[in-house]
Length: 421
Image (cartoon, rainbow, N blue to C red; front, side):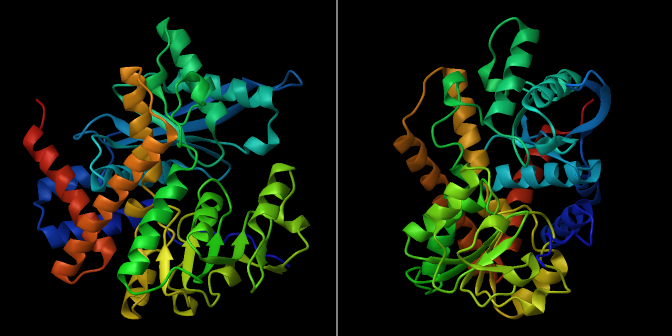
């Protein structure tokens, strides 16, 4: 029996605020500034009808939350998922603020989504849902206000429908209103692989800095989706051996290494890992505790908690998902000397290339894939080196360093701008 990805024991927002509180304490933020940064700026909840293929109507609930826009327009993904909640959107918007700041982008943080199971909808139903949801939240999104991007359950086609809907409202094309679009309508080369690529770039460099040879390192990846699958491929290209992966249906383990090409082919044919016969079946809980050099949790929040942290045997954890390690687990793992590469740094590749896409759309001048990837590497390496240098200088974990850098930047921008009126 294969277990599903375990549900978080804490709310995503409580984790996000606890991490912020610790950072605010370390930085000595005054109470007024702390109060502003601890809460979201704006949130919109919508309930809207969608006509189904059989002629019936269903009412769906959606959200768009903006945490802070002191450094620029809000930026963040849209998640179509049955477990999506307003609390999740608040937390993820806050993470996006810190993520954009730590890598030096002129964005604030936002997040949103619809409570639905996109796989249970036909293409036409999904399109109608997307266009109606876009219309409902068009009050607060746009290229100079809040720029959505893909997340769980969404992708380039959904972004295309959003861009087209906003363009129909405007009466002209506004490609910079969303990112993660198909390249045919202003999407950037390299956007799909950007998060996984940025994750692999920082992970390989961090391992080398700690004297861990990537060549031959054993890797487990929880979540073989848009982030985990790309990262697994690139880590393999760097000489590592991926011995375990999982998706929502099953976990797979093979000590000699998995055939990633076969797994990709299976997925492309519409199959699931439960159909794969070339490896042993394992649960997600077991995957997290395998004896590996590198663990990449790239599924959902709060997968490593105080209940299983002492069973994690990886030397390095690279957070492909947002907040997969909760604060209690952080304490346990840090005490044991496990190197945690924090989410707001290592999975920022997606928002970096989203920024590139936004810039290209505004300028109507597009870059080749090589230039996009080169610029991504430059931003990720520079940001990692800044975080690592501060961590070394202050004798603190990388997460603490990343948060201090990010919160300082946002706090400074918020303070300099002042409170209106």
